[in-house]
Amino acid sequence: MYILLGILFSALFIVGGSLMVYGTWHSWSLLVDPPEEFWLTYSQSFMKKVLGTDALRMHNYILGSVLVLVGLIILWNGFLRGR
Image (cartoon, rainbow, N blue to C red; front, side, top):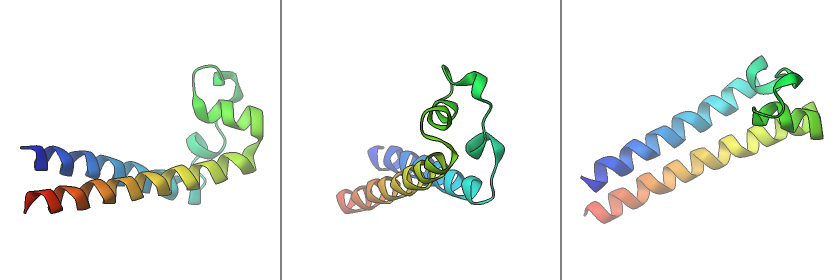
């Protein structure tokens, strides 16, 4: 049961991180150029308002990569414990 839960969480992390990197690479406006009037409720708008667009892009790449890495680590640990 716990192995399946680990696989589910790892899949969510890997897919979410991959979508973040892919969306930033293809300049999805939701990730790269969000409206600044939502800066109190949307973290991407806050990052853009405080640090600028270039820092937001770098943040998206780093966070997406970390999410994929964490998902792979969770998946790896799930298979190691399953043996």
